Length: 432
Image (tube, rainbow, N blue to C red; front, side, top):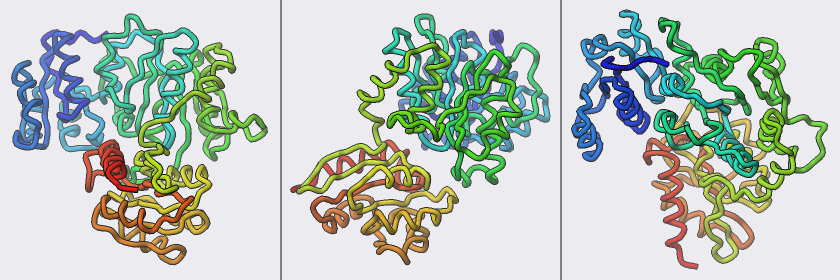
């Protein structure tokens, strides 16, 4: 474990992960310092007051070179790219640079079940946590699912496993050439799961190769005592498996006929349970009782026999594909938002088959119209409320209004959760 006593730990980013990191550093006797691109006026007042109360040194608006270079360790929040200028300054001075997950891992004394992938991560980590609870274990569910790993890592005494949702952003820093001293451990989950891989975050990653490299870094420090869980139906699966040191377990075998087992998310959970020696009956019970994840195919309300469904978490084309394939009713589709440079066109045939009309919003609205306009009517809407109202007016009995954006939310909302909450508020305000 790293000794942080009196060491200057500079955290890049003052969002939720940055706040959690600063608390962790101070609990461990280090000097917490935060550098953020925003100025004081752009940060919440209560956050500034908290920093002042805890005497966290701030570099606002950052990032200033002197501040970064006067560090013993630099820790990146997930929103900061590994090739950012502030990272380059640290590397030039041979200052160790870690991501939030890597840094928190230094102080973790419990086995980690880490899950990544382009789609389905939140559902799978919740299912794994529920299976563990049903089996009598105490899990700590954290990471990209909501609570930062760094906020939990010192409170694991009564926990058996950490169930960690990991995004490609959180794995990006593993792409950095290591300048870390020997007492810094590389992030190493006991079980690492890669659910799937498809186009996503191409507004952040320079290409698919970089995105894939970030995802697969979840396996890089595993050895033969660890487990790598891979989707056998993904084209990369066998090639990747040949490069890994961990014991390989494949899920999503096409030969399986059990209805529950053919769900790839369920298959991944069953594979994790197999490693842990948990009876499959426990898994099936959890699958049957699982209420679903908020903002993922979440039924909000039915008005005049029209069902309103919140799928705000669907920020990729493949996530929309999942939604369309799992709905049998004709669909009035609301989509659009901040473009992630994803190709929508592979969905054209499915959209023409399942969708009656599209209501496009946000920065990507014209791209949506250009992609689907020749197979379905696309109406441009000024905002989400207008889209909901127009979709309601257009929907016939027995149809559904589906918010499944395929895009990030940051052009109009803080995050997909806020987008989903606003959608539900609008729907719940409608009169039948």
